[in-house]
Image (cartoon, rainbow, N blue to C red):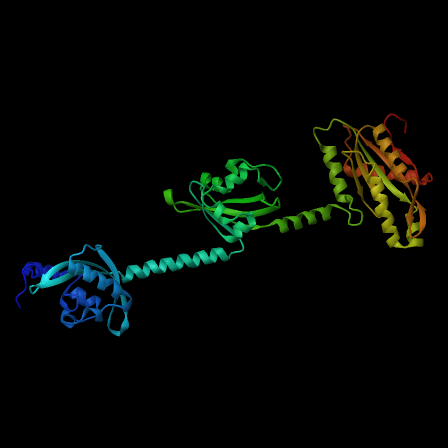
Length: 434
C-alpha cells in the first residue's frame, strides 16, 4: 500500500516506532489506520492486526468519548489544542485503563489523519488514587478521634486541627490554621503550667520538640475563650526532615482526672466530717515548720480536747455529736491567726500549730476558750461545751522530735483536764519555772 511520505517512515524509523514502549497509532477520526505493538498491548490485542481497520470509538470508554470527539474535530480542522488529554480506553472483557494521549495532525494515504502517542497511566493513576483514598481515610480517622490532634509546619504555623482539638481549645479550626496558635495563646497569657505559673516561649511543646529533636510531653492549663479552664496532657513529635518536617501534637482533656486527683489528695489530708486538716496533715505542717532552715521565730503547739463530748453523744446521739463537732470546728478555726494550722486529730481532739512567742500562743489559747463561750443550739437544747488545752513552745533551737513535741502537748492537755478542764496547761512554759 502506497502511503504519503509524511506518514510512511523509512525502514529504520519504522523499526523505532515498532519497538517504542509508548503506544503509537494513526486514525482518520473514525477508523484505526496504523498501530504499533505497544498500542495493541494497551488495548488488550494480540497484535496490531486486530486493531487496524476497527472503529476507534469501540476502544474508547463512553465517559471519554465527548472529549476525544471534540479534540479530533479540532485537530482535523487545524484548531490549536492542548498538548495532552487524559482518557479511558476499554479492553476486551470491559476492563478499563487510563491513558494519556498526545496527538498531532498528519496525513495517511493522502488524506488527513491524526497520529497519537499514548501512555498507559493505569498503574500511576491507581497509586495516586490509592494515596488519595488513604489520605482521606487517615483524615477521617483523625477527625473521629476523641483526642485532639494539631499539625504544625516547621515554622510553627498550624496546618490542620481536628474537631476534638478545636473543641478542647475552645476555637474554630479555621481561625487557628495558618497561625502559630500555641504562641498566640502564650502571648495572651492563656497557657500556663498546671501549678498556675506562666511558661516561657521556649517551653511551648512544639518549640521544645524542635530544639531537642525528641518527643516533648506536656501538661498544660489552657484558658479558653469562654474563660473556662481545661487541663490538657499530650505529646509533641516531629515527622519528616528539613523543609518537609511537620510537628504533630496529640493531647487529651485530663481536667476531670486532675480534679479527681486533687479531691483524693484533699481527702487524704483532711477530716471528712469537719473539713479541717487531719492528723497526717497537721504532722506534716509541724514537721515542715520545725525543720525549716530559714525559721527565725518560735513555734507553739496547742493540743485541745473537748470536755464532756461523750455526754452529748450518750444523751442526744452520735449524729447530734457530729453536728456539734462540725460547729465547734468552725468556731475554733475562726480564731486561728494567719500562718497557723488547726486540725482534727481524733474524735474530739484538735491540734493547732502556731508561729510566734509563748505569749502569742497563750493569746490564741485564750481565744480558743473564748470561741467556745456561749451555748450551741442542738435538737432544741442549749448545749455548752468547753475544752482542755495543752500548750508546748518549740524554740528555734529545740531539738525534740515531732512525736516528742506532740506527746508533751498531749501530756499538758491531760494536766489541764485533770485540773477540772476548761483551761490551758503548759509543758515547761518558757519564761516560767516548771
